[in-house]
Figure (cartoon, rainbow, N blue to C red):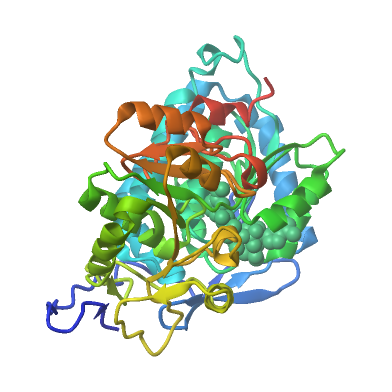
Length: 487
Ligand code: TAP
């Protein structure tokens, strides 16, 4: 499949194809569940198919874990907690985490290609963002494992026990690393359920974990759909539930866990404001806007999906933004020049199309650069809505796709009021040359992460998490350790 430039006619640059080879990846026809240190068939004998969303080609059949499989995985994790991993000193746990981190680096190309095949994201993002950050998460937490007594949680903070962890499809390997690394560093054992549409890199990680020699049962990876996730979070043998996904499912989990004594952290949806003032360096801001909403096809919980432009520069910024969008290349995720890959699933594409239709019906103006979409697979062009008002559905609901809603403001106070007019509160961006204004805004924005003159920057040392309907608890940094300690 060739990449298709969205470049406007007359300014077209012909790029030669630059495909990353998929030879490095061996996809097995069928994957079992990783439980008790080995791959075992599901008790039900049921499997489902995972697809390449860019071509709709079936990639593999993957085990569907039922209640008996969840039981087995939780029992294996309990045993490892009580007899092996849970008894290791921090310096020993650290060795295993360093080993996993190095193995991810050594097999980085394999992980990146597999991630792009199963998820549809451009190889330059899986290669330069997802995989290096996943390795960095294990390195960072390996460093903490023998220093927990100095982290401000008392001299001897204890692990919680068995962690049940459920993750979404937008950053499959990275979310697995965000969940596993802090849990293991603090001495917990894990049962992880990846998303149904993107299980393959978590299963490759299972292979790495087995090769790293972790005691059997320390990490269990069970694949399946939402019913597997529900069985895991509801299992009485789980002491801590960590969930990343939609607000809707997060609320169901909160209800299921209420009154059980289980510890819970929820990383949910977002509808972030990216605020551009008239003194911002416009070209830099345009790059930040593009990165904020079109990175990973907009399948990013902290995406800058609401652009707030100061009225005096709104036309100029929009103009430059449109010119920049016309240079983005949409197409084959394995082509190294591709900027915008495939939408992860038919279901997600339907959701994006539905919300975009609502935006048009409510009177906002829709714009996309000229763009031919590949005939097969799930695709959506980069899209900008101007003339958006705060009551529009596209200004309120998370679209989780490459769709930007543009609003305007006149004063900093109005910018704050509009930015905070959302049930979410995960992230925000500020673009201005005034440091004092950045500090003033950051203090007033109700968002867990605020970026200034940049966007979508992640680091394992920096805590990440939300307010309100974006959830509670933090991942990363010292704050992230607290979620896995009985402190
Ligand atoms: P969900 O539909 O909520 O799915 C997330 C995970 O939960 C998947 O593994 C899913 O399995 C599983 N699941 C579904 N129903 C469940 C239930 N009743 N009990 C337990 N687990 C259940 O979200 P998604 O569509 O995969 O991801 C998109 C959402 O995640 C967006 O709203 C996005 O903002 C949010 N997100 C948030 C963050 C942070 S850090 N805040 C990061 C990434 C994504 P299936 O795959 O089989 O459905």
